[in-house]
Image (cartoon, rainbow, N blue to C red; front, side, top):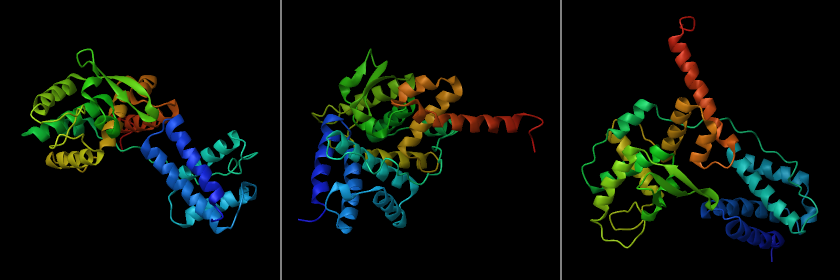
Length: 298
């Protein structure tokens, strides 16, 4: 039995807790598992045999080790968050008296702003003219994601029964198994109805709205590839699905300035997450000012 067996057993219990009690997604749980197994290996390599031997210096050394392996600051922040959550779990279950990770900080990551499309780019993308069943489906996906600011994972998980009030609203299952109601724009409704007509041609028992040609639920990877192909056809650089969500939020903020509503539509649990779009809106205002104000022109 290796020295880190004491932590590996508790990691298993923690993963069950965050998956079944906190309802974190499979992808998030898998990310926690990868991060914590790296921590367990680091502890094993140091021949530590119990939690009392893990102190602040060892925690900092682990962060330094991650940095030496060329992990970027954002990745290291995620590793640290995983460790802190795990040690809080240990403390709550009286397995440790205090967490050695509480005072450990990760290197700050650069504030990379989300990539967004201009309204002109969105219009160019949505001028796409579908010519077959698959392209009609793709058009419905893009219209829906831009209309309602959906994540790609939320989009592929939509079922036929998730629409409400004659397709005026859509029930969306978001992160943390939280459900929210989002409105649908008329262009999205038209595109979805066009797809539903075509969908009936595919023999399937699936409840999924978006299907592949074999009648199975469409995968996230398929949406990524199809959107890239659609953008290329429209003479645009490659576009990834999250750009549509970022563009939805940015364009809504530029028009309304209503950050709280945008937070609800995006399904953000914290307003601070949504506030990154105010930086993009500020950049937009500066650009307009530089172009329009006679004393700003260079």
